[in-house]
Image 1 (spheres, rainbow, N blue to C red):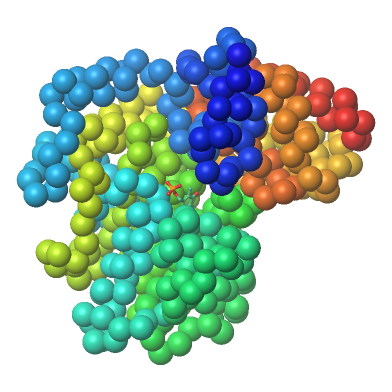
Image 2 (image 1 turned 30 degrees about the horizontal axis):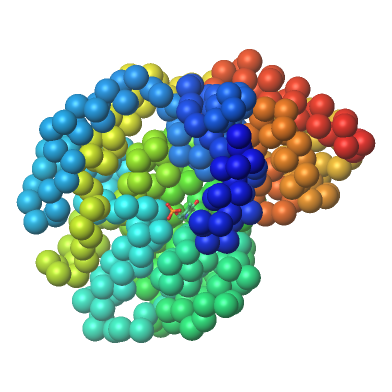
Length: 398
Ligand SMILES: *Cc1c(COP(=O)(O)O)cnc(C)c1O
């Protein structure tokens, strides 16, 4: 059955992905099921999206209610779910004002535009420069791609937006060397995701904040992957006690609905005037009802406490695996955003895990990334480890 669907899909979709050969059909908790009824333990969560797991009843009920009430209004009017979501988002992030988008990429676009507009308004300088980081990932649109630190993603699409330079992550000196008179912002992920699960060091986080204060640059944190509870704080920067001027969110923000956000301090946000930015769908009542419900469920289900309880167990188990297998180089990560770096490509390992009912995702060719739903329990960690070890033993890696 699946084979026929997959053949059909390959005819119909543009060839931008090499997909794994499963057709997923439904989900419950931390498990997914394909159209043939096979069950998978999901340690990918739709790329760090389904924080609350699949088919959360309260979440689904809230959306069903909103469907029957009002799906969309445009941003020419106000709507209650958006106001509630904005209230909860600003409270959780410590920012003053927010703009809801349809994706993480668009949140980055908005953040870049806001930084440039702020600088333009304050100093009358266009052409301002942004410092981003090597191996960062911020999205695939022309703007977001321009600040994405992987050359191979950018190369074919040049010229991108100008005025972007790349520093070495966790190397403050390399950031310092790139600062110019017209540098308006430093953009970085507090924990790099796609680039291979690299957490920032405390010194680096504090250091970039200091540089931004000294040189009147804006600090932009991309919390699209590492935010929304994944590190055990609502946003990863809170773990470091370092506050940005602008921040972005998406992925788990909607827990399955396409919604992102960028938010800023008052003084920065007020650089925007009517007409500077907009979106038709962004922040519509359907997606913001989801955002609002997600924040409520984080509280009622004490998700942050749970992440802090369960994540040391995942770390411990991954550390054990590193000790056991020579093909694994290192374990990195914070909270439920962890990774194993291998000395070999991980594609085959991931494919074999899938065959045994475990969904894992990579982050670069040699890295397996563990970004499960935030509701996982010890038994799920054990189940994952058992399958992973089976696969490693099978392929004769030690
Ligand atoms: C996924 C991701 C993006 C892009 O978000 P989309 O919703 O895919 O547009 C940007 N930044 C980071 C850190 C991400 O992980």
